[in-house]
Each structure stands twice: as C-alpha cells, then as structure tokens.
Image (cartoon, rainbow, N blue to C red; front, side, top):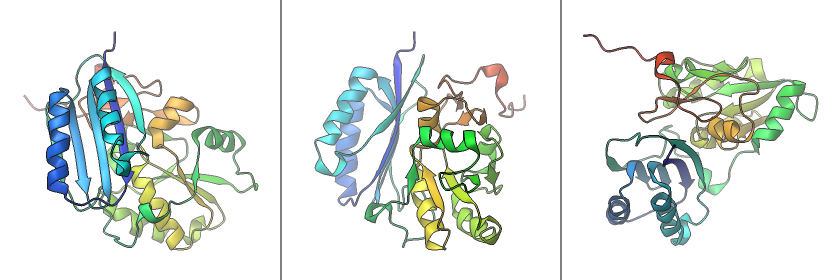
Length: 255
C-alpha cells in the first residue's frame, strides 16, 4: 500500500519578503510533517514535497489562500516510503537558473501543447499543419540517460544555463520543423520555450506539465525508459512507479 503522496509544483509569480515567507512555509511544513525542498525566488516558487495525503493536500489548500499562489497546480505520484530525508526551504535568484533575466514567464508563456495532443502528433509524425515534429530534451545529460522520447534531440548539456547556446547553434538546421521542448515537470520549458521564440524559432511549443504529466495522462507511448526525479526514488516509470533497484543506472559507491 503506497501511503506517501509526492507532489511537484511550481508557479512563476513575483514574490517579495522572501525571508518572512520562508518562515511561514517552514512552519506549515514542519507542523504537517512534510519533507522535501521548496525554492523561493523573486520570480516564483518551486516545490518537491512528500507526506501523508491529508497533510500535503491541507498544505496546498493553505498555500492557495494567498492569492499569489491560488493558480498553483501539483503533479502527484505515490510511494511506499518518504523519499526525502529533511525539509529544506532555500532562497535563490531564479527558480531554474538560465542567466537570461529578460525571459520572464510570469509576463506571458510560450505556446504549449497538452500531453494527449502531443501523442496525436507523434502518432502521425507531423503537427496539424503537416510539419515534422521534433522533440527537444532540455534536461542535463545524466537525466537523458534514464530515458527520453523516441528520436528526441538533446545537446549533452551539464546544466540548464548551457541550453540557450546549444539550441541557438542548431536553429538553422531545425528551421523547417515544429519543435516541442520538454523536461521533467515543465519548469525548464517555461524558459526554454520563451527563449526559442525570442531567437526566432516560430514553430515551437513546450510540453504542458513535462514528462510527469505525460506519464499521468498518456503513459509510455513514444517514450523509452524512465524519468529521473530529484528525490530518493531516483526515477519514475511511465506508470509513475519507482524504478526497481536492480534496474538502477546510478553508479554504485566504491567499497
């Protein structure tokens, strides 16, 4: 019986008084015995949390009482044990670092495509206009090793700040394609999608909710392997179960 609810959630919204907000959030999480990580920045919030479902849902209800956070949505999965060791709330400059301050998702999102619509495109091989569809993996190289969409392009990057230069270098070669960028939960694509539009890649979209939302609504169609997640579960299969230990690709520590 899987009794631990896991959520991944983010929202781009202008925030101030971060130290005070951190104190309030930490009190709520500790009172509810939640564990995980929350990132607070001037551009928004990013959360990976786990705990008993009634407590975690209660925390989200409390958070949404603040009008700034009322739109926040959470992607859910379940585990048998608590995947986090502690509760951490960190104050950062960016939710996901890109080093392009002009890219502000709060002011307007890039075009996005739903998981089921993407499946339709991938089944056909083209978008609704008949253009070839190419998946663009915005994640780091070690994450791609766990799994990715069939025939997806990735740039073997080590950190997200390398993505703008990588996609810019391939701009001309991809000009006649429709590009769909994707990542774990959608947060990196909020910025990558805007950046691709900024450099003139007109036919580009971001996958709404990332791989995890695709798993939830579609499953394994057109996807190979698992999806790395940033907690002790290591990675999730398309059915949102943790990968079996014997299938782990992490290097075993030396004796």
